[in-house]
Image (cartoon, rainbow, N blue to C red; front, side, top):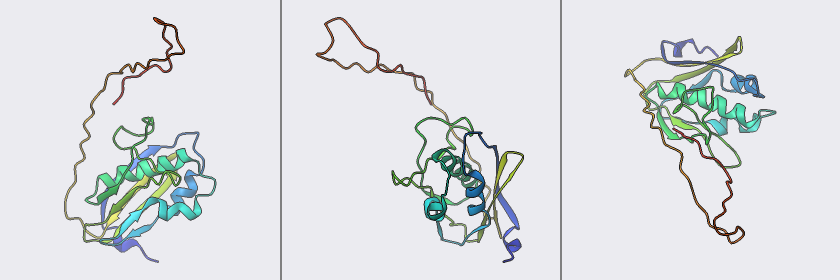
Amino acid sequence: NDLSNYENERLSLVIEEIPNDLVGVKNLAELLNNYVLNPDETFSFMEVIKEKIGSANSEALNFIASVLYSAVLETEYEILEHHQQSLLPTYIDPGREAQVSLENNEDLKFRNNSGHVGLIKLSIKNNKIKVEIYSEGKNKNVKVTIEQEYVKKRTITRYSKDLPAGQYKLIQSGEDGL
């Protein structure tokens, strides 16, 4: 199958270091490599990989979904479903992370509304993953801006009949967040 016709324009490029604790990244990258996305077609990450997850752990699924989401942000594709991770990962900039899960029915879905056939390419070299999205043509240039808002930690007080008056028990210490 000759896919070179679809590689006229590179719409996006993302390269990230692969964290050491991930299992199954290579297998997931091979499953998604050379994925052809036709005009008006919807891509569902979980539909594409669910039958062939194999030994991939949830961290690997979230990592691949995050680098793919980061690449899709740089295209004119429409994001239909996206979930943020509850803890910010160290492997990608905040706002570019994605979480997927079969158990929690969380998916990464997007639609190719560019009018051109798209080609998703993933490759691994020197412990880095490269995600590229190509197309036969390009309608617009896309610029991604992510604004970060810092949130101060807060204290939640719960009263309990199990503690004497005036005493307290710290259950969890808060952290500042994004």
